[in-house]
Amino acid sequence: MKQKIAEGIRSARAIAICSHLRPDADSIGSGLALLLMLRQLGKQAEFINADRSPSPVNRLPGHEHIIRGQIRPRPFDLVFLIEGGGEERTGQKDLAGYERIIIDHHLPSGEGGSGLDWVVPEAAAVGELVYELGLELGAEFSRDIAFNLYAAIASDTGSFKYSNTTARSLAIASDLARRGGFSPFEVSNLLFNSNPPEKIRMLTRVLSTLETALDGRVAMIHFRREFLDRLELKDIETEDIIAVARSIDGVLVLLFFKEIGENHYRVSIRSRNEFSARRVAQAFQGDGHHHAAGFFYRGDLPGAKKEILALIAGQMP
Ligand SMILES: [Mn+2]
Image (cartoon, rainbow, N blue to C red):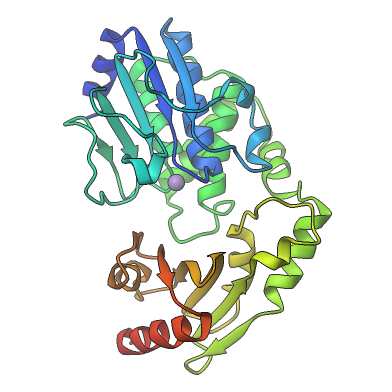
């Protein structure tokens, strides 16, 4: 597949890249690395995103190249969709008529781009796939390209700690650090040691909602919109809050409820071992990976907890 994508790139002149809404370090880092590779090849390439990047993702090298808005009506021969296609995922209102290629490591959820979609669920991050594509294209891994790809992988693996980390992830990361001439700590420092104080205040509020259920095998935390009221934060990046709550010994499932409207929640599920977060999410029309998935829930919080816990209880080993 990557050979075919490389051919597609070689024969295109103008190429757009777009990531998903609420972009993370994998989608932005991978997209920026691809952008820089395409420009290196002399392509007229643009990275166009509907959503603003949260901090610290907006400090990745080259981030200033990203244009906010819609791809339509600009002319492009090829559009890369990083981590999923479809309007709901990308925020792009009109992609029909463009030649599209999805590069993703989530199982496809229906909205394909073209016959050239490249989806590898075994990859820890899209950063690993863009690295492979870079080798195929014969790209020169400049410092910024390598740094962005390393950041993409480091972020999606929680600094190479999560269950998705493979020997391949480590080998790629090592090669990137060597080619890019940066120290891994520079990336860790940017991604993990750059929290504003407000973020830590938010963390204490969310963690104070901690509850456990089903004999300590399920942990639940929630975020209320009013938590933001006295803080200057516009939105929160939740992955590290989730990581703290799911680190509790004996917890197999973590549920994070984020209030996004009146009686409307985005529910993130994280699981360990055999327990499938994805199966729970699918029962509520959501999707994701085996250990990380999510869905939207309409209704009040006590009702949501009751309904979801009943389902989880039925799936516990
Ligand atoms: Mn990812």
